[in-house]
Image (cartoon, rainbow, N blue to C red; front, side, top):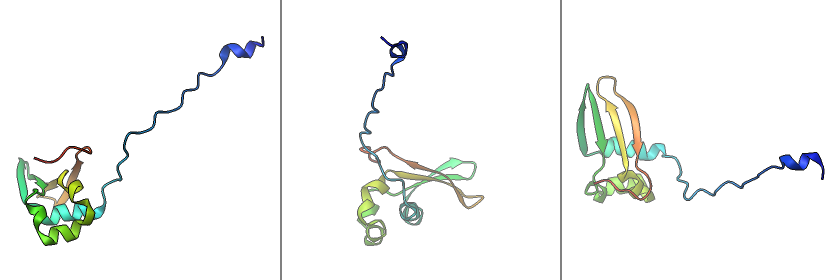
Length: 99
């Protein structure tokens, strides 16, 4: 037997991903900023903004989001009031819905 056989590769194929979600689009983030009706003060000039399920019934919101209504329910944005900018965009994992 050849000496190189001892070091044979133990190749294992990678496991397939169970579900791959597309990244958030600017349209979803823009719609949440424009139509958010749930605002929670986090202190230090920061606000958590979300769209409620009740607000998704509005025609303007539905037209802005199109077929991504469910995805928009799980998006939360931390907004900095002092600087007027987004600090962080949070996206819930697939299958979990906003309360």
